[in-house]
Length: 128
Image 1 (cartoon, helix red, strand yellow):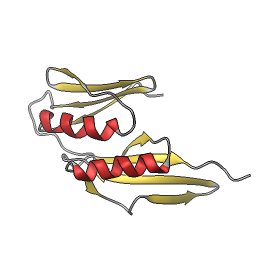
Image 2 (spheres, helix red, strand yellow; image 1 turned 90 degrees about the horizontal axis):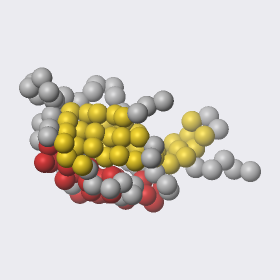
Image 3 (cartoon, rainbow, N blue to C red; image 1 turned 180 degrees about the vertical axis):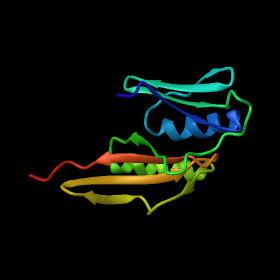
Image 4 (cartoon, one colour; image 1 turned 120 degrees about the horizontal axis):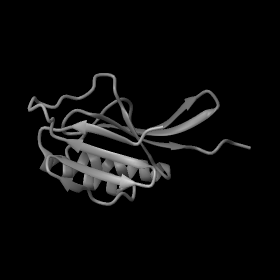
């Protein structure tokens, strides 16, 4: 459904350092820099961070969350730990399993240094 997601930053160098480390835990290569933007390209889509082109300050979406797929609960934990170690803050509940109907999800939430809400998600296999 989506080709890309782009969020804003007020400090592109800080954002690149943060996201290179954070997304590296998910096996994503470091960003490609294009003037006032950085791009993380994968087979499943592109995540980008940009300084606002209108010259106004970047702000975080109130009520918005960007979710990244984790391959395991351990990978989501590593993602969370690297995020906190590099300037993110924990938000919502601590990383762990949440039940949504018949689905069990392992979720880890962060706010990046610009205040954007992020989530690493692993869907636990359904029990037989």
